[in-house]
Length: 106
Image 1 (cartoon, rainbow, N blue to C red):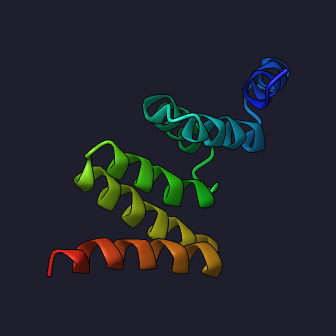
Image 2 (image 1 turned 90 degrees about the horizontal axis):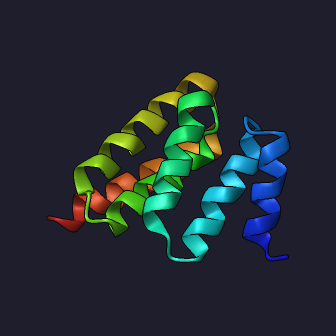
C-alpha cells in the first residue's frame, strides 16, 4: 500500500486529525496534484487555523498554480496567526517567503 492510500485509510477513522490532513496535502504535492493539495490545505486551515506550518506550503502551492495574490494573502494571514500564537519559527519562514516574492518584482 502506498503512502497516499495509508493516509486516506487513516483519515477515514480520524477525518479531523490535523497531522493526517497535513500529511495528505504533502502527499498530493509530492505526486504533483497541486489542486488536491490546495483543497486539503484549505480544509485543514479552515478547521485548524493554528496549524501555522501549512500556510507556508499553501502559499507555494498557490504560486505553482499561478495564483500570486492568493499566495500573498495566505502568507499574510499566516504571519498574523503566528504573531498571535508567538510561533517565531513559522513566522520567520512566512515572512521570508513573502519578502522574497515581493522583492522579486523590484
